[in-house]
Amino acid sequence: MTTPLRSPPFLSLVAAAAICLAANVTAQPMQPGEQVIVLNSGDGSVMVIDRASRKVVRSFPVGKEPHHLIPTLDESELVVANATSNDLVFLDPITGDVKKRMPRISDPYQLAYTVDKKWFVAISLRLDRVDIYSMPNYELKARIPAAKTPSHVVFSTDSRTAYVTLQESHELMAIDMNTQKEAWRMPIGKLPAGLWISPQGLIFVGIMSGDYVQVIDPAKRQVIKEIKTGKGAHNVFSLGDGNHILVSNRVDGTITQVNYKTMAVVKSIKVGSGIDDLEVSADSKEVWGTVRFESKVAVIDMTGAKPIQYIPAGRSPHGIYFKTRARRDQ
Image (tube, rainbow, N blue to C red; front, side, top):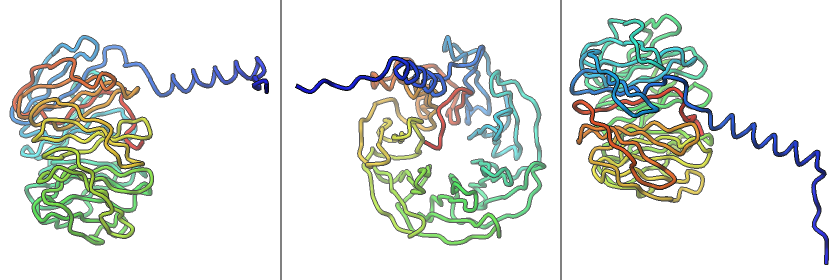
């Protein structure tokens, strides 16, 4: 009988230490006093929830129709887009306190920064336009027509191309960030909304009029796969584990976990009608989601595959954020 090889004690200790270090890096603990920031689009307010106790701490007006929010690239501030107020509000990303307000940002619906830190993009959904601002001073550089109803945006990993879904013309548009002009557009499913780009460069798009996510190869400008997830497939988020994404299905009221490498569905979890934006904990085990049609926030246990708590919110809760979250590019 062959005797199995055993690692020397020293190497075993080194391996164990490496595993512990990797675990500590991946599953960073929540910051002391960390708050969950939720935008109530219908009320024009920010709701602040203590993440540890899951209790609402306060709520305050922020502007008209705040829909989405993103951290700055250094994560020192959290940017809220007030679509009807035509301004941006910058919050403390841990406490939710207002730091400053930036006026004269026309109809900001969805926001994004390029990874190279050169550009800031604001999607003007109602005005059928994509606005490009130079950084760090948010100076308007270009306004690109984007009929009809531009919705969500992601960038290529080299920051050279922005990809925008056009909901009512049922298209995906590519913008060359160097020339700041439309590069191309292609037809996709009806009512495309949220999208996510994989490390391999494939784009996953939620198709709201259907029950699936389309996988697009932008280099070939081809749809290569349709993954059935649930009715009203709306937005796509990384689970942060390097293998999976989550799709929020508004009509079915579910979130679906998909292995983006194999493009196979892992499981679906019933959450609530109008499930929309999601935020994922650093260890990928807990997901918070806004349930827009039921005016509440859901806390979901991914291991047990079920909601573990619902927190009442204002009218039409939409964007959600907390500081110690999973990486979105995995």
